[in-house]
Image 1 (spheres, rainbow, N blue to C red):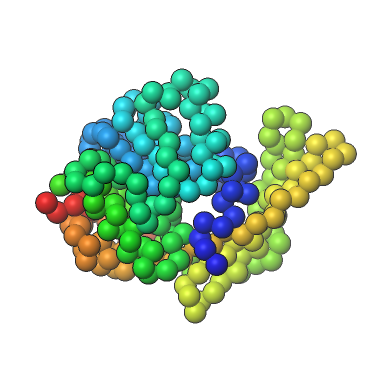
Image 2: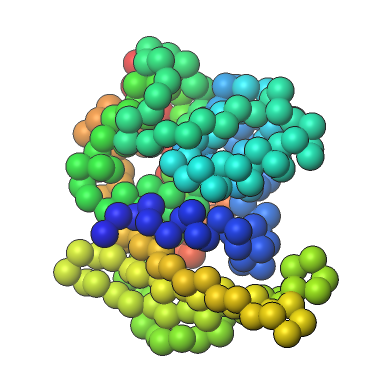
Length: 256
């Protein structure tokens, strides 16, 4: 099982679902952080450009990397429609081995909304953190958004969690199951998106897998590869983190 399995299938529903869940509540945080740090900026697991595209409207030198060609094709279409191709570069690649020159390039690397939790093995996470360090300028910022305590999600089977329309005529339902694998600290989301347009019905099934990583686990790993922890926030306004916070944003700087 690999954490990136399922994302190609998810691509056509990614923006539809996120507009109804995380939506844009984190976008202003990333925009403010990018303005504070300056460019160039790299987003890990950029998907369809949900975070990076708004950044590119106000900041040049934005780069997004993702291993899913389907996600990247959708991001490219959004870039063309927005007229931002000159401000935002898309790269297909592996975040464990970033395909960029080492030695002091990016001022900010972003890992939004649990992207590092799709790295299910310790060595993959270690490689990704070390690779990020090599492409950051000395003193550059690495910002990580974790979904905390996934292991506390209650298991359920085939629950309709979202309903809505796309394009007016198409109705979509998300039927979801949640499974826990406590032996590996994994949470598995089995998803079925059902589309109905008139008398036509289609179904798309796949699974997304995430790993629970605690604040202490992530900060410890960051320190071991040469980062200094600057702040751990519990919301997108940089309020203090606490065990009941529904998000966890870690800001770390590369030591020189």
